[in-house]
Amino acid sequence: MSVFQVLLVAATHGNEINAPWLFDQWEANNDLIDVQDLQVSRVIGNPQALLEGQRYIDRDLNRSFKSDFLDSSDINDVEIVRARELVREYGPEGSNPSQLVIDFHSTTASMGACIVIYGRRPADLAIASLIQQNLEIPIYLHEGDSAQTGFLVESWPCGFVVEIGPVPQGVIHHQIIEKTLLLVENCLLEISNTIKRKACFPNKVEIHRHVQNIDYPRDCFGKPTSYIHKEIQGKDWKNISRNTPIFRNLKGDILRLDNYSNEDELVPVFVNEAAYAEKNIAMSLTKKEVWDFDPNWQESLYKILKTDNFV
Amino acid sequence: MSVFQVLLVAATHGNEINAPWLFDQWEANNDLIDVQDLQVSRVIGNPQALLEGQRYIDRDLNRSFKSDFLDSSDINDVEIVRARELVREYGPEGSNPSQLVIDFHSTTASMGACIVIYGRRPADLAIASLIQQNLEIPIYLHEGDSAQTGFLVESWPCGFVVEIGPVPQGVIHHQIIEKTLLLVENCLLEISNTIKRKACFPNKVEIHRHVQNIDYPRDCFGKPTSYIHKEIQGKDWKNISRNTPIFRNLKGDILRLDNYSNEDELVPVFVNEAAYAEKNIAMSLTKKEVWDFDPNWQESLYKILKTDNFV
Image (cartoon, rainbow over all chains, first blue to last red; front, side, top):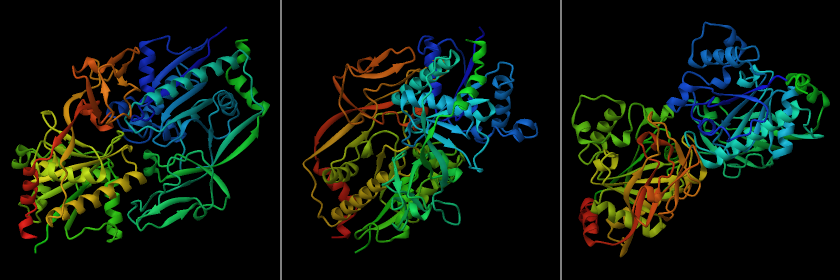
């Protein structure tokens, strides 16, 4: 029976320092987390940015895994070089290969703990469903957003982001560490259960499907002219309706959801995330949906986890 | 009757963006804040850092007002050049002079709104006492800390910092804006009342006197090996005793207050402020004291406000 290797990444953004702390804690105490029967590789995504306490040096590492960046050797931005390195070493065909990656992030938004998946890859949906069933946490399905591409996890056959907040950038907070630890343990447990064909997949999964991003209203110089209205600040994952105030501008005027959408009910996420202002995202709007669990997802996950080799 | 000029500074740190927002809001609506009968100059402390969304470019502007920096023209760091400019223009003998400055900051620590004064300048104590009496907010007396000098307000005859949190760096939050506005209004009101000799000074003032800073325990490379214990995270202004846990290290061991101090009771402030890790400050410890209001403070403030010219 061969051993399945899981790749855990921390500090893909150098100012999100709780997951790297947990890695250090784990290094100091090997028994901190039960890795089940798995081989676990822990890697710091952007060590240079972590050292500098910045999100990135030249560009966002978590938008740098685009095939034209990875395939070319022309661009030598710190993060593109690093993306190539990570794929070369830990990618599915790397020198120390993994088929499954979990990328640990934190946010200034009041998101609690959640899972982010990119597109509708069946294996991602399968593993996310298992974790949601255990921990009752939301799944944010990011899709159809052509301005945001090149995410790290997309370079692995299966992978997802764990996003935990709220915490300021550059701050270690006991609650964020504890939640990160809980997620690591649970993810490893469910992967191990799946490999042993002992995972109990749910019948339904609750998805928060990405619908659109909303930017801060800005003046002709690009400077925001509104801030997040108090009715929606900190209200990630809460239903909002057409009449819900979204922004308050310099004059005190209010913009409401119906200025942006014809939907009757949506759910905001990443509300006021500090790092997204430069990406022209004040929040993302999602639609909460309950999907039937598709047996093909499970088969796809089995295939990637090569469970035939293990059972 | 001549007009007294008050200097208000925002974004002395470029990633503390709520006070600059309030300035923009005020610019868009002149009636937003009642300036009483005062002349108010609003200035952005570090415009270049604000544009970059960073605390500073070359060094902390709010540690750059040291006489050897201000008097020399050898050092041309962005912030030292800016400190000289600010004093030359708005200083007590500047081209557009003020005798009183208020410097608006925000913090990632759970400080609420408070006033910080530097040393025991009588006029600062007088005006801070008035504001405390009105708003029931704490006064942090920073003194005896030779590693932290060169604060902006020290270049004016009277001046103090307004510090408001918690808010992540680079995030505008409605509560922080509202509290900043309340403080601006109240400060101007009390200055105006004092000039008109209508201020009603209290008999007592409650001071949180700086006792010491505590750094994160670190390894030989300077990397923190402990985080703020959950018993003290977010507990700014709350009494702690010798047995209170302060840090938890990588192995799970706990350091308590009595590892740092022989005092029976102290009060932490700036707990886990993101920007202070690089200054080797995990928190500051203060002693809460109630002082009798000294009539000399009032006289000193009257003198600086030149109330004889106004009454």
